[in-house]
Length: 389
Image (cartoon, rainbow, N blue to C red; front, top):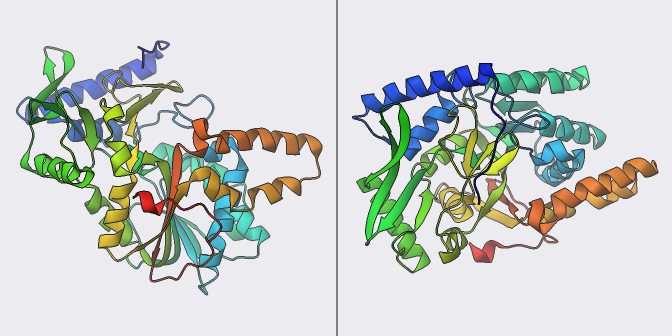
């Protein structure tokens, strides 16, 4: 990807990124002059009041840095709701827990569709760390009927007792902090950052034992060693994160939607510079070090890692498929056909192209459906890719 040109941020944004850099430099000094990429990413995305997700920067949709599927069309949320229905109907008082609810648009569309299908939720929980996004969610969801609004609960931590129903995480895992590594002459180097004067620069060190073991396990799993010069990412703390999410579900399903690959594709020879992607001013690029605190940093996810972590905690992997196939089986086309307004039907058909076309979202994004203490029998019509995991 060639170097991307950006408009200069306004003075308020520049002041913020300068403040982030000042604190980041102190953090580097506190860690003997070097931070792993994991710790760098955790700082610039999640440090309270400073990080990209914990400050007031505008992130999603028009004027933000990236656009998610719920912002494109309500059809996304309608299809998701339809896919959740069979599991929700198994419980007298079903609830939904959405992890990282963005602008609140997905929650809004799901709740509206459940209203149309006469499914009454006990609660709709939202686990959100961003105060800015929480405010946007509240504004969006204030447009729902009062009977729905009183059942929405914002959480700072997962419920003490897990819910019965469904957990949803749309484009959440890609933004979890990860380590980056580089192979030089069969040696594993851990990528991190340091400062030379006031200049933030990338610097490698010999990999930690934890990172080295994780990479060796990946090499064993894919059946080859990484060549010299190979650069990629790895989630060394992912199972701990999944264990924390698991506490939120007593019985039901967990749906994860994100862009990513199976492990063999993730670490393929063709991806020798990794899967990291950054977003700033609604442009994608690959420089994680510009404007710290003002841009998003993420990476495609290793769905094999998600499946392994879930299986180790007693989940069943019920489905792994392309987003387009999952949405198609959620009666999304029938909803369009039922629209009586010709202009609205044409508009929805344009929206669905973005959600379905392979090179936009349809096949780049995948869906993984997990079950816990819950039998799932309604997915026979979806093209299943579990054999690739």
